[in-house]
Figure 1 (cartoon, rainbow, N blue to C red):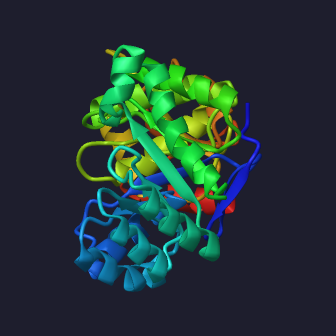
Figure 2: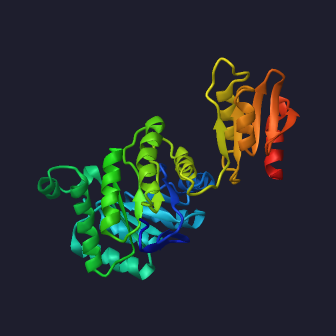
Figure 3: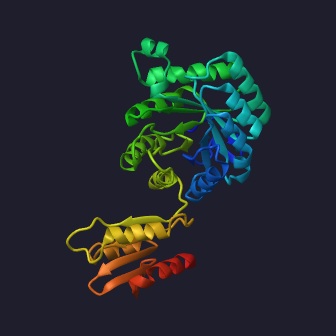
Length: 347
């Protein structure tokens, strides 16, 4: 069920019926403002609507004003261990905080953070990972499971509530997709706060996308979740695209060109993978909610072409271009990029 409460991070609404938003996180040194701004802009171009930056030291805090000014999207400061870094990020103008209840525990420090966050209308995301559940809760609930993870989150947000703070987002992530599903179902039943979905430590791109899609697909289809991140080891650039693909596949949101292509077989009259990747790279970041199909032969081609807005089909006579279900005739592969862009622009 959708979260009852809505929070606002900069210009972005989260929860309370707002569209599910797509997040990512930089991997640059935050103290290097120029590199971080460049990466934020690239992530935003690829679809990130809010970006998290790690703030591990004083130099990172000092760089935040410049980074915030240069960012096209709201930013989240990821804080661990040191409450003074959270205070510094708030003073710098950050749009949202991410705190870990496992490593900032003093009530006096949380009171200061909550007071300044309320003064500046900055929401706080409480992030509980399966690996950061406090030891007493592991003992009480018999290890890492949905109950111990939920108890860790509840302990922290109850404390913030006692301080009068309500603008919270919860994230409960495990490396096990189904544990992630169970604990977020529990959270959706037991609290009104928006939920940030993700599978933590999901691995490199080949596994992260699958594990994230399993967990998020189940939860989002049940109406659970308000903002998502597909966490991938390595460059964060594939993360926004993977997030949008999940939302698009579920029919929740469309923003970018959707590429479909056939599995190759002995009938293929072109290198489907090579051409599909070429088309995908060419259209990366193009904001048109249309479908482009790449088909390897005349068997599957016409059927898929009629369902796609634009299609490229391999035939005995060479490449054939279709648009809106009708053939436009043969096309020279050397001219394909120019022609595809022209046809997309005319849609």
